Amino acid sequence: MLKEERHQLILNEVALHNRVLLADIAEVLNVSVDTVRRDVIQLDTEKKLKKVHGGAVSLAYANNTGEQTKVYAIEKKRIIAKKAVQLLRNGNIIIIHGGTTCLEFARNIPEKMSLTCFTLSLPIAIELCKKPKLEVIFLGGTIAKESQIASGGQAIHNLSKINADYGFIGTGYVDANYGLTEFDWESVQVKNAVIQASKNTVLLTISEKLNSKNRYKTCEMSDITTMITELEPTANILEDFRITGVDLV
Amino acid sequence: MLKEERHQLILNEVALHNRVLLADIAEVLNVSVDTVRRDVIQLDTEKKLKKVHGGAVSLAYANNTGEQTKVYAIEKKRIIAKKAVQLLRNGNIIIIHGGTTCLEFARNIPEKMSLTCFTLSLPIAIELCKKPKLEVIFLGGTIAKESQIASGGQAIHNLSKINADYGFIGTGYVDANYGLTEFDWESVQVKNAVIQASKNTVLLTISEKLNSKNRYKTCEMSDITTMITELEPTANILEDFRITGVDLV
DNA sequence: TAATGATGTGCAATATTTTGCAGTTTTAAT
DNA sequence: ATTAAAACTGCAAAATATTGCACATCATTA
Image (cartoon, rainbow over all chains, first blue to last red; front, side):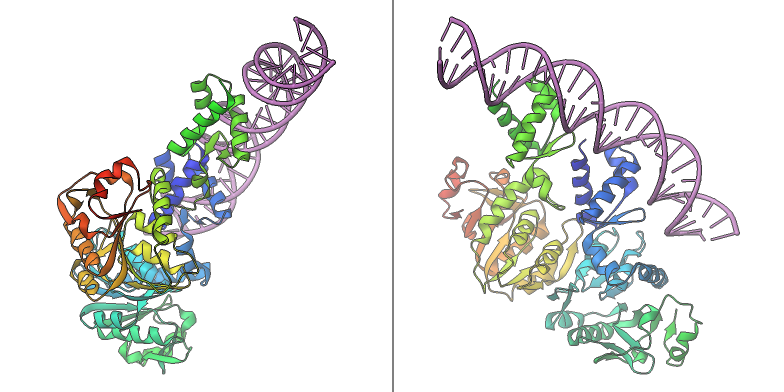
């Protein structure tokens, strides 16, 4: 077994599933975990994947989650994701918009859960495909290259035909009094359509984004059913949000 | 045993399996490992393969950064992709269905080319997003988990609104007389919709699939404008296809 | 033919790389 | 806080690479 063959297989696996576990590869290839770890370290220095604790993830994934938001933010997003999945019940129909926090949420949906999932994000769709019991529906539209999220008239039109139990969205900026805002007009349109298409809208956001504003308003705080942050609902920073009537988790 | 003979055999082996072990070659040719090593060193400097610890791998193998397709077929698919992109002109509207051959095609679209690209495949959409001058539109629908391709009524309905210059599709099976077939009914429906939505339909297929059939018929050969394989259009195997009127490339 | 030199080949000694293991430290989850 | 999983470290064994050298082969030239 040549080292290059192992590298090839690891890269294939990463390309296909966005991540690998060292232990899995070691078992399949019948080599020690140490060897696989060394392989992954080399591939990491060659910038062909990103090594993480326990395995490796694709650069595409790392770029979408880890780079602009530092490693410490991943942890926060994981906390948020864990809280968010607890809202889900078997049989629910949900819409997941896009962004790094929603991606983390999608990853944390339990394997055994059966849901109907609509999404607008290519990375999230791929993530959802890994869960055997989900029905995955992509709401088509023009793809924004950086975010890999569908938007435009077609996306909004498709959303208008849905009545989901939950809509999960992120936001660029959120202010207790002024509501949710974005830098980008297209995002505002689509997120609004998600809100309209959902009985309950769940906002997933790390606390850094609290009390900030930008150009275009997505919605008022009162349009949000539940806001999930990595903080305890009793945290001081959340004080202003308590009086808006939004559920804090 | 001439050196050239050994070189030829080593290159054959690499072409076939993408890798060789020095020890194996030495045994087969009944020469010392040292000799084989020197041969491989020479072939490496001649850029005909890549020498690695313990053996050698093909250049394609060494260069790629994570292919999803099986290594043995990737070279053929690359040849097909290179031929296919030559059909494209700036400003074209194209539909790319899905599958590994189409994915390779998407990867080979030149950076500087400006096109409007519709697709039904998540991996292809992500690939297209890397090209700065493309407009990428995902045709929504229910995602098949294994293939990560959208299908179902929504996909077909969206396709019905398109009039593209080219539709690029792969196929599971193709027979000169019987036409294109699939194992899967959903695929048949969607591919048909792609064909209807395109002025010209281009079939991308490796020669292995020629002269094979399966359960459901996608279309007749006469519905295909151009068939691209990795072979020369004059190849013997393509004889039966010449009388169908399809363009062979 | 014989001498010459260039090249190819195998062998053996030595150096380097790769790999797995065991013990310790760090990280993550409960 | 406790526990389990994973990472890191150093080390030794095995596999492979490198090097120098001896010898064989073969073409060229005297």
